[in-house]
Amino acid sequence: MTTVSSIHHVASIPGQYWQWRGQNVYYVRGGEEHRTKPYPPLLLVHGFGASTDHWRKNIYQLKQHFEVWAIDLLGFGRSSKPSWNYNGLLWQEQLKDFIAQVIQRPTVVAGNSLGGYASLCVGANYPSLVAGVILLNSAGPFSDTTPQKPALPQLLTRWFFSNPLVTYLLFQRLRNKKTIRKTLQQVYFDTSAVTDQLVDDIYRPSCDKGAFHVFSSVFKNPQGEKVDQLLQKLQCPLLLIWGDKDPWMKVPQRASLFRKYYPHLTEYHLQAGHCPHDEAPEQVNSLIKTWITHSLQTGG
Image (cartoon, rainbow, N blue to C red; front, top):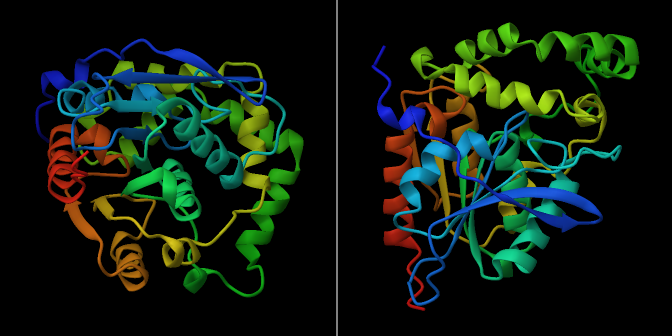
């Protein structure tokens, strides 16, 4: 395993709150607003159970070149956790309104895992607000891999998460710090990147009021539009960054499907796990910088 560099220990920058539908939404902003620069701003969107803290290493470097924003999806991080139904449509609308009301310019939206799916949703359905989409081990179902009838594992999963007691016990187990560390060590190829700071950043929001409802709601709600349907609507440049050692995703198969439905994308594969932006931040930051500066110069 490689030695963790100093970038893994940078601190999160302080943020602020935006009021959305009566709820507090936390976000951070790095770099200065450069309306005369030819590059669009960049919005970073975390995955399930994570937050803006998961992007601290990326903001640290990318803010030197771009106006960088990161947001806590409703139900996660420091954002409010109301008793709502949580799904891709909700987060799509949150991202859409944040870009329109706060950033106020067409934006490059970059997301990891669940955040990748939300980023693709807003990119496909609100093209006037999105200058480009970056997906890092993005989640979301394809029609090609969705059976016509629910398979037995799917039915068992639905039953499992429909049982409040079972779901609560699972939530309590998963949010234990030891379990968080063990899970991260399973999905990070370079386990030396799993630091106490990372574990604390994921553990902290799980203690908030409403966190259990968010957890159970995500698994009970419909998945939303299929990825191939979204790709068929997408009009902007698309960058894919894959951590090939991701044990949760069949990267070769998913990458092939992305290319099938959006053949003009740009794609890179790294020796990393499910969260390449956090595990190999310097590589990811370099790829994002190069792609934006070479592919998305607006001339504004």
